[in-house]
Image 1 (cartoon, rainbow, N blue to C red):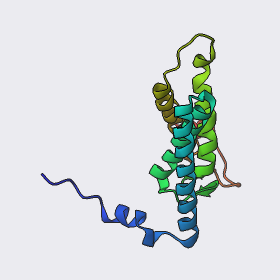
Image 2 (image 1 turned 120 degrees about the vertical axis):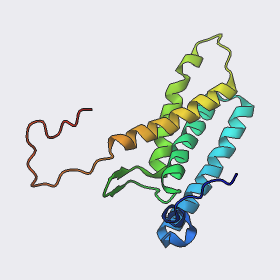
Image 3 (image 1 turned 60 degrees about the horizontal axis):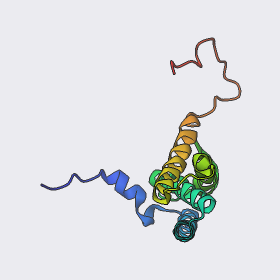
Length: 157
């Protein structure tokens, strides 16, 4: 059984030929940053450095979300037609913060730290936090002269 082929427009959007020069540089910077984060996470896992592991794996989660969303094209904050894109740099910062917040239960004395589980939990927390923050900014702002009537801003959420 053959796997379904993705739509041609989606494939074309992710090929390097469709990237602008700035987007290529952004993707290269994101890949380089990701490799550095992987090395830091690997080293901190074997050195059993809880804070560094949490921050680096959380940052990897935030950058991973950016790769899944835009292919690494966006490094800095950008406002586009459908909302605000945080970019890989902001994703790394948010992910690192989420990772550090995830380890608070392991900071009590006498608690055995399962470093593999910590790596997984902090990665997914960084991934999730970046996704949630971008989902909250997914709607474009109203134009400056637009009138908002009562109930128009409430969409039932």
